[in-house]
Image (cartoon, rainbow, N blue to C red; front, side, top):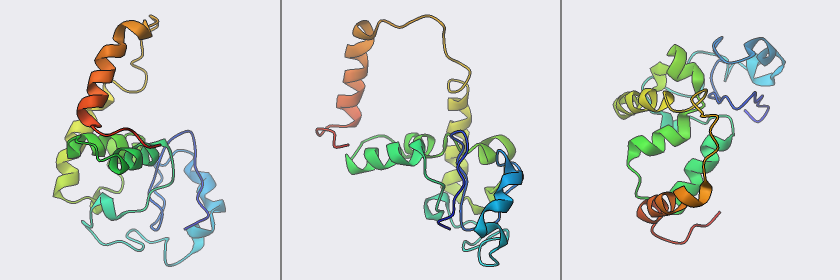
Length: 152
């Protein structure tokens, strides 16, 4: 599972068969896990409904920010942490791939991720934001959800 391929910010599970909905899925054939009988089945090292928190994902900015939030004892609700951790897991939230690994909490949180997607990619404004003007608002959110001094 260490021979991971990572494309364009999209994340995907490792330790089970790569789904065709993964971006550039044809290149996954070059990954040694693709041919490893321990990892190349539908469930691989996982079981149905095991929960995404038990699934090892390809490394990316999603997991980094999730771990920063957890390390800093955020008070964000679980749905927000789910959104942070899985917003680049397009095979799941666009195509339903790997949904057999989800537990009930994941299914509930996925609804919030679908709401978030409306404001994520391709929803950016061409109007430049005055950072100093909005800074107090964002600092208040950081203070609310990250009460201790942040550790990066």
